[in-house]
Image 1: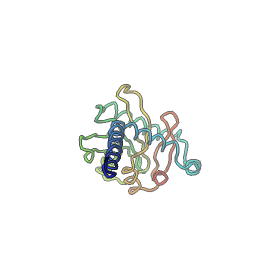
Image 2: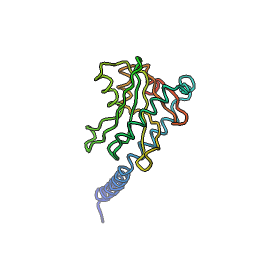
Image 3: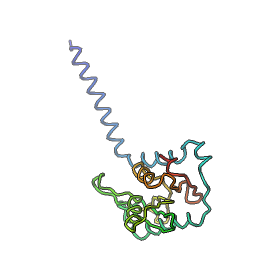
Image 4: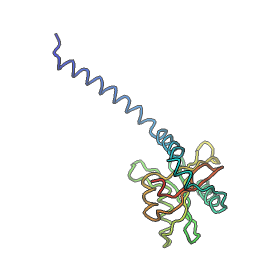
Length: 183
């Protein structure tokens, strides 16, 4: 007869193995999960906030920022190191751009938003007004999608200007939200 504690240990071990297998499979798909979460966030932010605070952006200035982020991607893109670009405009009208740099060490990775903000601050400005973040696709250098800033970058942007505008939506239909609504 097998002791009850032995049966419990076998059962717990089996559950742990199953959890580890699920975790390993999940780790393989982390990037896909992050992309899906970003898309879900883009589509499911509080609808009242969206309806009250989104601004359609047929504005040439916003399209200019999107084009600048695309230009930087075309000039500097190197998969998988540089898949995200950002472009921002200051309240004084200056445009700065930056590119994401993926490191083998997660803590050393630099977001495109941080890169663009650093360029702005290096020139002595801190008056961030509008920012856009694009993801490029290595299989098609002319395909881009607008993505939301990551949480760390949202906090940084909010620290600089809680009223800063973030261009969200799609390339074909960009819209604006304030960063404070994204936090």
